[in-house]
Length: 567
Image (cartoon, rainbow, N blue to C red; front, top):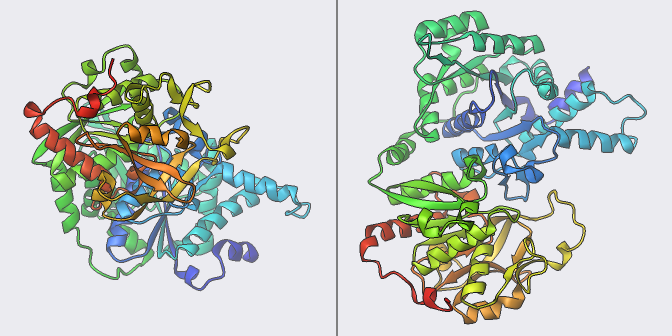
């Protein structure tokens, strides 16, 4: 037993002082464990602690990279080229720090590691079991990540809902860790729902009681309850939950719905979540927290001076979580420009039957985001053409740059049938194509161009005027590229190649000089956007939309390049 504890806890002296906060969820999914985790991380970092955040998900996929956005939402890409859960995006945004892909752990990763080890004879003939082998691997990864990132406080979100069969090994692992590390180094925070029953006109605490009871059956007694609710929770209800859930009254924290997720840290601070966590861990804060700048940012989000409307033409608009980082990047850019960005969501397939003007008229700008598969592509291409011809600010990301190149090749360069080989392998003009080493049978998981890559920037371009740098670094998630064989023809017709990945001579960004603001890039700038450091391209795009909205009535209309090559 002593050997097991040493293996789990690590031998470093610094590890003896490392503290851990485990956040679990009950009653229903989608309560906001990720936002609570991110908010707590932001607060503790504000006190001067070194913080890291991890997500442990119980699904058997190795990572979310091969999962449908309708199943999982956005796939968030880290600097070190990992496809992770979208909650890592919240962690990075709230704490203003980059996290490694190893901070997103799935059951698939755990079992893959164990099975490979067993096949190599790593267990010396023993029977491999959930306890101790699976739980030890969970603890090993959890503690290793905290150690490698030199965290004072490690915040770990356990995915799923208490009671799910697949989540039991993770809950058992954190139960064991409290025994091994001691009560002063581990805090259990349980997020539950306090639903409002309209017919009875009252909030109900029974679901929280049942959720906590289920957790205690597993062997975990929560130290703190965070109670999600549509409205304020009365003191008598908090006292009732404290009594029946065996939690001190001051550890029952209210989590009322907010207008913006960026209010959540302020609300949790007022409720005393950060103070209770530090008290239980006996962690003396290095400094006083100052939330003044954050409060000012929230005030700008809630009460902007103006508003712009940006159309987003995408493939997964029925689930906005599929574009979570884009939504947040618009909020950040809106703060920088003192406007509220209202998004007009448009399913791209609709534009294949209707004229784009029907759905896009009145929008101050157009964004075409990333995606995979042929469905709705022609609608995206038509939307790009509408923005180009009408001199409406346009921003294309990943698939958006592919659609921009396809549209320009067809309608300006007059390359009939121009397409991407992703959608039409027999296209006579494959202006978008795979790299040679991507052709043939390639596994789908983790084989794209992922993570941070450098981009060389052309002076005098939108890209240059945005970053004011010869080289920039942004994150990628794609497999298909602009075909270099067509670059000369595109440029001769008026499309500028303003960003290049020099190492492999790949197109990173395109612009149309004759257009007021037309930009498309292969990378995903939304992944690095932060509330107080908005992604530069989103900031400038919203600025262009604001300018377009202000002078819309007197706009000259078709740009010169928009008139070229039209039939």
